[in-house]
Image (cartoon, rainbow over all chains, first blue to last red; front, side, top):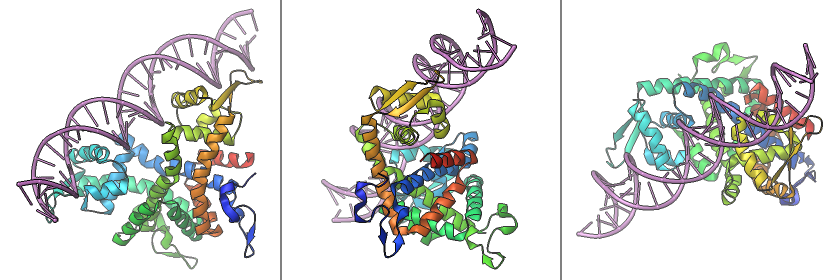
Length: 175
Length: 175
DNA sequence: CTTGGAAAGTCAACAAGGCTGACATAAACT
DNA sequence: AGTTTATGTCAGCCTTGTTGACTTTCCAAG
């Protein structure tokens, strides 16, 4: 009852090489799903509060974050990372450019491309938002300890779509 | 430069009791933040595809999930768990009731309350959505292994708001 | 028994942020 | 010269969140 039919031969409370696989029960998986749901709310809560004051939203935060992370990135690359339509991104990007947080420069090699960078003001907002978000993560990491953090990263990487995993790994290289 | 000023005396590459605290650097925190972002997209991707066919959204999924988890729950309790306004929840709940996936029964002890349960049809949809979501989680758990999963849970619990943490823990008891 | 307030439902209006489709422009590529 | 690519933009739609106002039901305290 606790185990799914899709688990195949390994699902449930069977044993393999003397190791219990109780962590693969449907109950454990449900716990993980609920943990993701509640944690993601906490994860976005602090930046959201700051953004609300400035009449920006989560979409602006995401754009700012990834422009900060990959300075000079093109619109197309950002679209791929964020996984939204260009119309949706453009609406966000336009307001950020109008407000002087982001600057868009025509490409040198390929003049069709626009390269995006944060302005001074953009950097400042990024810092405030990033610090708010990191503060909570830092406390969580500290409480959980290094081994838990390693496991946290491992599981999250496995949950990602392969394509997103690629983006995730590419960001690592750039840092 | 890599370390934040908000870290206090413990931030950065300092050592404490012979243990490196490199996992608390801003870079590591940023990696965690990005992992959360990309992973959450994967986390919701499979149910989202199924829901799109049935012209439901993520909000319907959340309602179905938690009604399944706590059968007979009241609207107020659900509001607390989901963290949305009653108007927002009501819109979702109304369509689910109209479509015969959820039934709302007047409370026996307190007849102002409505107790929510999934109908047969609701159970079926829950199973399909839940299985789709668990399938990915199961694969991720299997790849990462039990120790990583334990760490994953620990960190997520620390990220939650205390209030949400309470809800999370209460769900555990009921299961 | 009356009344205060909690629980629930509903209506209206609005905003953010997704989406599709259509179309324009400039630049690069073939 | 013609096609493809990168970007931007307009219009319209949907979901899902919000606030505010108002009603109905009904428990419980005075």
